Amino acid sequence: EMSPEERAFQEKIDADIKIEPKNWMPDAYRRTLIRQMSQHAHSEIVGMLPEKNWLTRAPNFKRKLQLLAKIQDEAGHGLYLYSAMETLGADRDEEVAKLHSGEVKYSSIFNYPTLSWADMGTVGWLVDGAAIVNQVVLQRTSYGPYSRAMIRICKEESFHQRQGYQILLHMMREGTEEQKAMVQESINRFWWPSLMMFGPHDGDSPNSAQSMQWKIKRMSNDDLRQRFIDQTVPQLELLGCTAPDPDLKWNPERGHYDFGEIDWSEFYAVLKGNGPCNRDRLRTRRNAIENGAWVREAARKHAEKHNKADAA
Ligand code: 3HC
Image 1 (cartoon, rainbow, N blue to C red):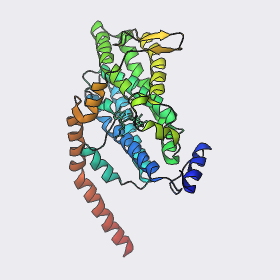
Image 2 (spheres, helix red, strand yellow; image 1 turned 60 degrees about the horizontal axis):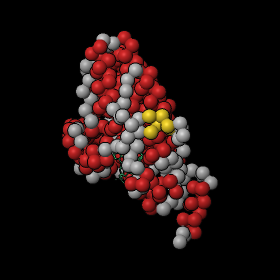
Image 3 (cartoon, rainbow, N blue to C red; image 1 turned 90 degrees about the vertical axis):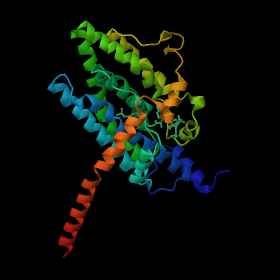
Image 4 (cartoon, rainbow, N blue to C red; image 1 turned 60 degrees about the vertical axis):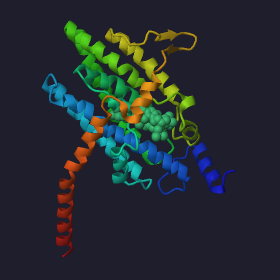
């Protein structure tokens, strides 16, 4: 039975009135938003690592600049999302500590290695492409600060996807046979893990029902995944490449592409920390925070001295 406050809250949600930081909200609404927004922010920050791997080995200066710009965007997206998360009373250092202890998640996709330059195209095209499908819909999430962060992030993400696809199109049109094979090999490695970014099937999603009722989630995991596949297959064909899925086929009755079953044992193994790069990613993030502690300490001391001088 809902309390009068809960009923008033749900009526706002049903009327598509945004919930703002100062508004009353159920504790569970606050908690699940901190859960999702912190993990979303962690994904942006950890998501810089696979691309950093190729920053010093980009084939030319233009590609290096594009990759650097994309990585800097992702750092910014992470900071927007941590700030939006803090409006719910969450502490950034505490949430980052949970990331480092392995207590909370970040997107599984970033636990896969980037083994060739073609991966920089595939990551931009498939990984940012999947993230965009998710984030465009998340612009309509019921929590105001999260919705506004999404609107701003989506403006920058579309450049990431186009830049990635352009790398692959260039390699397929102008590249040598080895470079074309490199593109196909890269797609073979990233196809299924990109589909896993949308989460488990709706029936296996513990958070979806409540998130949909509170309009945190506006489209289900499976519907977003299907939308991503439907828009991506034509781009795959334009590349002249294939997906590593023999069951991928247009279904005229459904008006969607049918596709094979995802390997959920791989998905849950990666979530449990047993993906190819999980340990490496967390070690790198821990080192970055620890190695940067002296800079933050010096900046704090400097600010205190300055403030004292000002106050005097
Ligand atoms: N990787 C890691 N964890 C995942 C996951 C994935 N691909 N998919 C689901 N999970 C986790 C969920 O977080 C949840 O665990 P938790 O309760 O401990 O948080 C559990 O698996 C069950 O999944 P649910 O479907 O019940 O969870 P949600 O309702 O939260 O749905 C989600 C999962 C669709 C990822 C949702 O949280 C979401 O939309 N998050 C915001 C989008 C996001 O995080 N995107 C990251 C993509 S990468 C990125 O944005 C960077 C870009 O620059 C490339």
